[in-house]
Length: 206
Image (cartoon, rainbow, N blue to C red; front, side, top):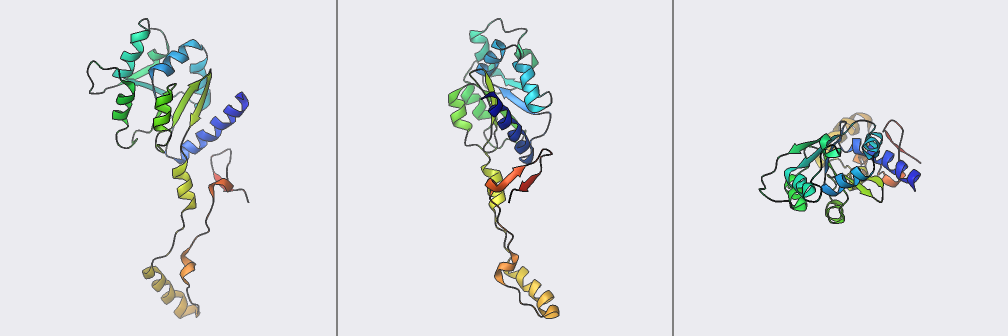
């Protein structure tokens, strides 16, 4: 199981780069993720191993308040490595609503959510712009919705009528060849046939 998770994380990191995420990776940790990390002394080291670099860790004011509510002696733990993201909420510790504020539009800052909360996992699993780092049963696994990458790979591009007319003038008049409607199409590639190489390049396995 551990070997399978390691292989999955390695592949997901390469796909992250294709979706525009770059090192240093920025991770917003929720209170439960922080609490779980503190139970396993080597988990912060494991985070660096997953991302092959030292990620930047964050929490919001609401997340910190929630965490402090059941862990008042929070000093000298993984939260010391986190930077604060300001939120407009006052005297609130609703983590789900606070994250909804941070990700209310697009994930322009390329944040990853580190969570051990099932409700948060369920809410963001369908968001193709928000990767999830899940801490469950002592294991950390990276999840991302690759629908954006799949749609990009399966898109068929066709020449417009104006482009076809221009091509016909160039090649039809000079070379005596007729340009068909299908000449502007590229081969359709299914993401299931793609393989990610060690250097992050995507190749066709056929």
